[in-house]
Length: 169
Image 1 (cartoon, rainbow, N blue to C red):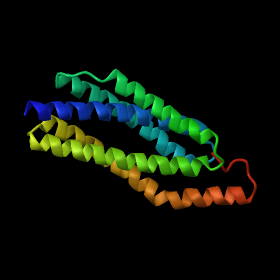
Image 2: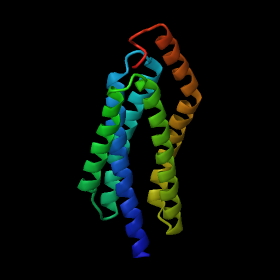
Image 3: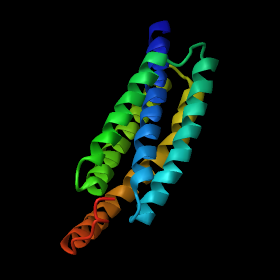
């Protein structure tokens, strides 16, 4: 049982690092979005939620007797920066950025689903509650992106066809 608790604690640290990566990636993307207000509003809301989730995860990890991993957190921040920096160089940043966020949301959903299942296996109601709190918003964000990717793409194509410099972001 102690091995499983340690695995869950490690997965909680992974989740904390994942949320830091999300914050870095989303904040950078939002800072460059100028001509897609609905997407920018969604991203900005998600940044606030992500910061809150980081705090809740850190508190939960500490209540479980652990601490966040500085190495994992640093790695996540570097990855988030690299992901966001790569978008600066492409002409279709808004489309590729939205796609990347959609994929990242799916990873977050999977991570919290697995974490919840593991917590359920050892009767850890606090971790289950935390995952239950996070999952609906993650699913909603992924669903919104899934439904709006065609419109974002269409707007990008229309702006590009009109030779607008505003298509990229």
